[in-house]
Length: 270
Image (cartoon, rainbow, N blue to C red):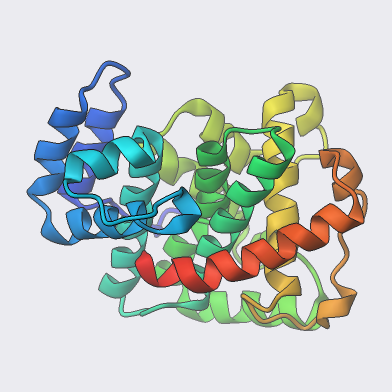
């Protein structure tokens, strides 16, 4: 892992995140900083008007948009925009991993809204960043990443397993280091680091709920074809995730429909 360079967020994004980490920060302070970044300000205005977030009209000001979304949602938009920009800087375009990350984020927030087992913005950022270590892996080891992808497709193992076999470490470890460096709270670092730990339920129930939500979100993304899979859509298993999250098959199918619509309409906004 010595050769691995952890990606940095853009300076302005880091400033916004630092400001948002203050629980007493005012909307006006956030607005002033975001207003200095035209593309980010436009993104927040557009997303605030997206009916997935309850918008019904074009917000007249950036302050209105920030208040409508909430500061945690603004934080998530800043991170998503930064990661998309990172893919562009690495000449990866809208890489399949970007689709996977955003699909998981959107699906996780919808599942959280329906199950009420997690804050929707916590679920969004967990879905977005639980595989974030892949960004660094793709950049540092492009050939190895191709072998990892082939192993996942041909052998049906998880990305974490394939990554550990090929590189000697998991993308989860890398992702946990990245988000810690970016200044995210320990709960998110723990979620990413311990995502595949079967004992996670014993450690902290809230993390376990988030892991269950994100796992179901990932499988929904496979089910509706947000990311390609060697497994046929009808063969994607949900297992006992519905029972764990307190939702039945009918509710899962309704969520699936909502995820597909929200992803197709929401992804271009990011």
